[in-house]
Length: 327
Image (cartoon, rainbow, N blue to C red):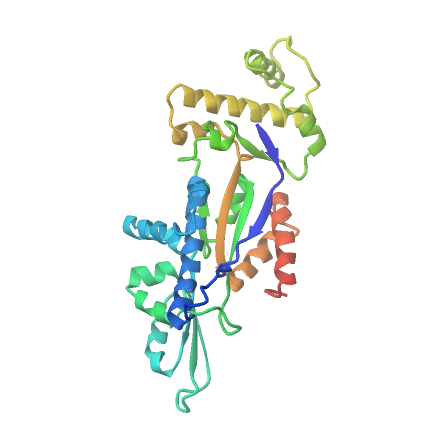
């Protein structure tokens, strides 16, 4: 069993630092393909989070991964690939379809009558695939100040907090799957990882972790808790003072043992997960526009927010301010 603190990571979608051979001309086509590759890589990062298969990412794996997502109809992962388009007078007719698309943001400057019009579209790869608009990748660009910027964040938190975050339905989500992840495998260290609550005594948790019960004492522990909770009879197995930290750790240990035993008895991960608590560590990828993130912060970085939600939202909000993404 492993205990960790929650944290977040901003996953900026940006081109790699690639080395171009000196005898190769850097033309618009090459630049455009590199921008498309950034979209593919963002989609792969989000998609592989679900199955914790990031170890399969290679320099050229993203395009093939996206192709599989498209063929399988797994459109939710495609949403994490943000596409920025720059349109001019010659491509102005492409602009209007994005104005009426609920998953896109469109803005324009200048005047068409004077030939000074420019259009700026923020959308995602799923919109292009499902509407048959992939040809518009011809207009892909880096985001400018006129574009509505989209930001992707990876949260490492407990399942309870993730349940609150996914209520912000305007976002795109990808989450570590307890249905497919088998935590008894070597890639997970053959153990479960849990999140330390911000209100708990972290030192006390670490001190009691691994010292409460072993496999042979597990049955006695259940009996002790039965007597303690029901008040029936006199408890006879009493190796410690029952503190909140010991209660918490005991529950985690029992959950882990039961989960692993159910897998050993033939249950699949999607079945054995039924005994896992909310404190189980999960990874949640969220992608949304700055406007959507502003709505997120108003709820999750408020004094009334759940303490564990604000534990993540408050420093993330500060980071957004530092980057000039919000006030």
